[in-house]
Length: 529
Image: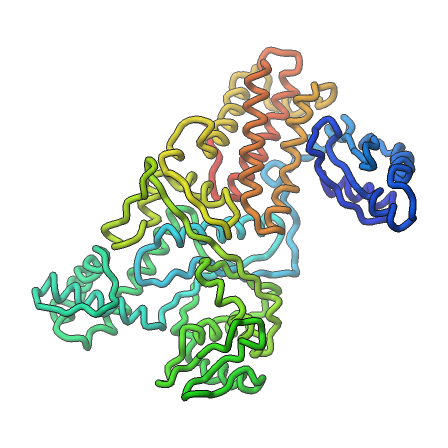
């Protein structure tokens, strides 16, 4: 609808225009400030230009135009509304879907939590955002591959193995141990030790020579658990890439950096010249002991990514990784690739309450809140919706008790209830489905027409949400559409009225927008409550 109207205007006016939604519904369905732009070019009063444009557009059958304060307001005509409504119905669950774009293939990497423990609630926000971004992008025709980068080469994996060893030695074979300053705590570590004893016997806790074995054992089990936790909220990946498997190429990659004057040696270390590429300072990538740093792993991984020749690379990182953006882009630049192809989106932290009090930490996890515990508490639908309800780079706080309420204060309930109400109306109606689908959308009251326009606006909302990486726009749209429907339902009788079939046809389009919109958020719409 948006693009059709924009194209009609641009074809006639032979100029690119901005199309807006007036805040006041009485002003029409769309408006354009084009007269103000042209006034600067032609040195004429914008009101005069607006009147001239309105005259030129007066012959268009799809809509009528009015001029107000220099703005050209556009009101869609009934025939055009009917055409748009019938098109939406005929497209069904493909309403708003765009054909496949053969260019612009995207690699989307997200979550990538260290496989050293269960997924906590902070990981969940980036996971839900990444999965929904992928769903929306594919719906809009983009070819997107999803990837999880397994950080399995660093000291954290060795620490996991050592933590399992110490837990087993203390609690299972009853030996005295001295814990280091840093190690992984929580009941899950003892669970891993128990499983390790089942597989290897008590001998695995005899001495620290078994730590590498326990590291691999624990990492594999934690990765399986992470995959299981993600599957509970409908998240899967196309690829899993092991950091450890990529380190064989480190010498070759280091040579590339040297060839592009991207590194230098100082104080026995190798430094990346990231300070020349927008970073605060240069960064160490190889320590004095010749061991690569954490940043080296990211460099190796992005070298691997770029060799796979995608048109765009999107990373979703936790907000604490903000400082890594410039240094990683600097490395990409010095490897001879286009760092402009990398887009990094940040996912801010989440604060959880329960009945106004801080949500209880998981004993199993130690000192953080497990994603699976919250899913068990409020369900996958509520978790996904609330995590997407605010822009990902802003702080999010919510109370899980609010998401259990069966009223309008719970947005996901409110949206589900609207869809269920529509299906109840369709069941109560004596009109058969084919009679509803063939009903006219002409001569309906303004309130019903406004409702239809809201439902038909869905495709444009999805496009803007993806382009701006603002998935909260879909949440806001669905809440607004549900609210408009509930208001109409409460104010007007629908069944056994002269316009019953026409209003039910509009209801079907509303249900279509809700169903597809929720699906893009990873939520299945409910038809009964």
